[in-house]
Image (cartoon, rainbow, N blue to C red):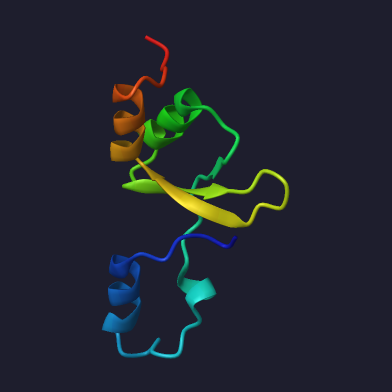
Length: 86
């Protein structure tokens, strides 16, 4: 995984009129990631340190993207009985 490509980054890249043919991978921003086998505690720590609304979740064996974890998803899981350090 190269990184995350947000709508804002696309808009900023295209705004100058000179980068209309820029490859998506070249405009992607490096971002923290989670492995699918990490705990909600760890997910919450990574999300808390990040300014992004969510974090890509990667397969622990081959690092392919398998999902996206947001603050809201962690809070929902915790409300349903998940655990976080208090």
